[in-house]
Image (cartoon, rainbow, N blue to C red; front, side, top):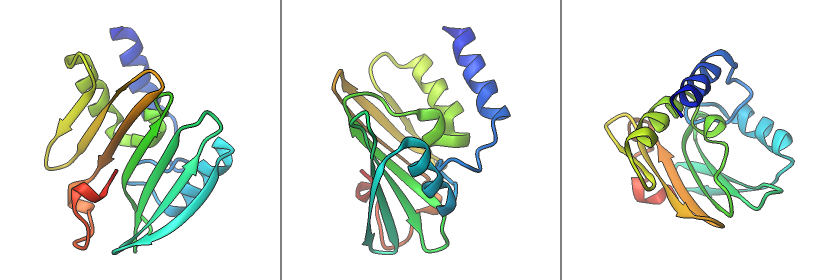
Length: 145
């Protein structure tokens, strides 16, 4: 298990993230994700941001919250399987792996730099991640789901 976590962390550092709509990424990466995932996408304006909702072929819905400057400050997901956390979380993936190694059920990270909540059971997984310091003043953490 430790080797797999270490390998995943190293891979996350070696693979360029510019094509991924990871937490902290940009709008172009959201569009790259749509193509990579073969997802259908809708977008909706919310106070101070745009939410890009993508329905993946595996049934997972991923919501990517993009601010006016074009940066992804939050992501949310739900579906029958877990999403690709490495792709969604970018540099925050290491914090996810750390929490996963210490917590038995679900994952929760609460810090000034990152809020991450993931849980569920087979065919019913949900979660969200956000960068509190990047959250537009017009939204609260509860708006990210």
